[in-house]
Structures are given as structure tokens and as C-alpha cells.
Amino acid sequence: MKQLQEPFALILLDHHPDDQPGAFNEGMLSCGNWVATARRELSLLRCDVWIRGFSDLSAALSTLSAFPQLPLFLSIDLDVLSPAEFRTDWDQGEMLFSQLKEVLQTLCRGRRILGVDICGAAPCHNGAALSCDAAQNSALLDQLDSFLIESGTISFRSCE
Image (cartoon, rainbow, N blue to C red):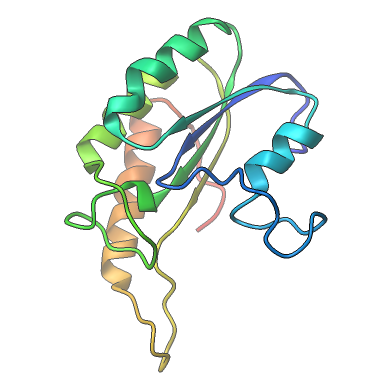
């Protein structure tokens, strides 16, 4: 987001707010404080909208209606999804993947997307106590990638 050259709105799809004070020290950026840091340091960030569940969609639309021309930066933490559909190594929300797609389609309709980050898939470690379902991670990321491209939300995939 530091590289963006124009005003934008941040859409945060996450089970956790990520706007807490720094857990270690104020100067250290972490998964828990990056939104608070962005609000403080990014002069082009005009608004941010936190969507924890499908029921937050109407409030998000209301907030964004005050900024009809702003392009979006999407931050999608997969822990927003229900553990019945996708397992992470964090406390999770209850959003279904079909609802995530509907939220994205609704919020992105008629807006440019300046960037997308996707995080939250359980890490895969060979021989470690924590393991993941690599096939699950891959399948969900492929579905999300295909949806974003087919819906016109993004037009390329920059990294794995």
C-alpha cells in the first residue's frame, strides 16, 4: 500500500481487526497492528472497512458510498472463512466461500482495484508439529484467484 500513488479505500476481510497497538514495540509492524499503522502513516488511505462476516456487507456499502470514486485495496485473510469450509491455524469466522465471493462482487462492482493481498492459509512445514492440508490451501487459492480474474476484479496473478 505504501507504493500506491492515489487515494484509496482499504477493504479488510478478516476475523480479527488488525488495528491493535503493537504487541512488541510501537515501531514493529505485525499482523495485529498493520491496519493501525496504515491509518497513521499512509496519507492516501481515505477510509478502511472491516468485514468480519457476511452481515457486515450493508455497513461496508454505506461507508463506501461516501467515497464513490475511490479505488480499492483488498486485504483478504482466510480466517474470515468458516472452519467447516477452510481450516487455518487461527480462530476463525463463519463466512462461507460463496458469501466471500458475493461480498467481493458487491464491493468491487464499478470500482478499480489497486491491489489484493491474500493471507491466512495454514503454513505447511515438513516434519513440524503444525501441518496443513496443502491440497486445501491450493484449491481455495485457485478458486479465489479464478473468481477474481473471471469477475474482472483483477486481471493478473503476480505471485503464488
